[in-house]
Length: 517
Image (cartoon, rainbow, N blue to C red; front, side, top):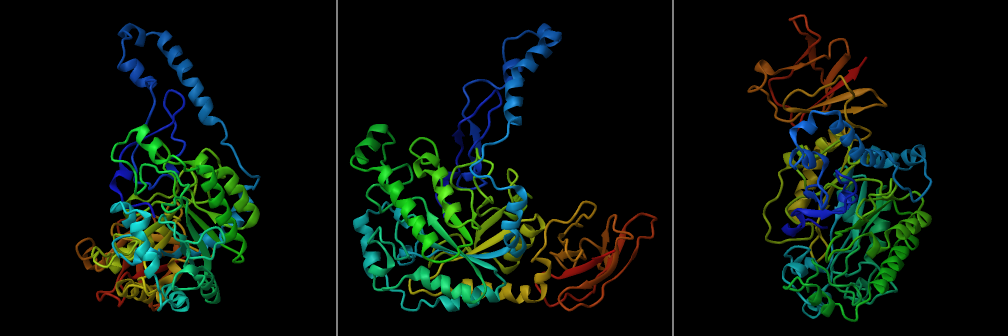
């Protein structure tokens, strides 16, 4: 993934058009947390007038109004213009293609590669500026003798995860699959196996949909040009330094390599449900859609796998169909939005602070924090994909396994509030300390009691639902179907008052299921 280096979140400049500027590629950046500054040389209209030399008389005249209108007209026309398209899929066809994804809501990410051996973060090659020669010892030593994808799949299924995405190749360039375009692959290690093939077979056998992560970056390939985040990036950020380092490298050859490997992945393993391409960072000494050949790459992807769902990191934001979903990475629940530039989202999150196995990392999220991420995502009509970083021997970290088990315990009794659910319709607001999800097929509303009991918020554990009067016909705790009593407010309002039990139900986040009239 692309979350570790702090400099990737510093202010960046993007191309802009018109007097106010337009960010054409923010959604493909490393993370939705990244701040954007528009790299315009022309002053915005407001600054031109209020910060410039025009006199107060002009502001009071009709000339000013006409001048502003004329200045803003190109920007308004441009903003109203439809975005370009790569294909001809209709909105109805896209909705049908993505129906399973918007229903299932919860998936597993698996980051696994040579970086599990140093166990110091998946960006260890970058962080420690390791050369290919220095990194070679991990390839020579890689031997996942305990790898059991069937056990992985059973853990994912028990946790309530409906789809899984595996890193077929991360930024280090090592391939878990048997590619004919490189020798830098698992079949040439002591593993002697196509690990991707076994992953696909095991997860499909458990009824879990499968997806592939593929890094657009490749810090091992000899033709991949050195950029600002390459492990061998120069200390001197000058053009001449990059020219010297990139002498003999050919990005066109790497682009063909990338395309060939994606073709292999989408041809040799049957139906693939998701493709997670990671990531673009356009700008000086960066890489974007032209470097990857993103338009033609996406056309090929759609041709090979018409039903596949693709993330938004190809730097194709100027196209209305350049991606299927946004990917806010490692954001707080409060930062999630219901949509991102018209797209649904899947927030990608880790159990701890890294994606790959990191032995000594100890900032692990609590079970309550993980459930809050899941519930919040669904309450905003989004998905959560939660990451596991297996050890170099091929097993899930015990801390991750413990968390998966706890999530599974909660999902066993409360998954009705997740699967098939979305943001609550207008007129149903969540009281403080709660989160709402809604299933439009069953017309059931789910009130998640995030900080139960509520004695500090609601005396006698009576929760007021503003405007709910005459909208509910029955309420019960979801975990055991025990009745929750309610009554109309006595103040003559349209409020409803839920009377919650004094004893906390034996579940981390109790859920009240309300059947609508």
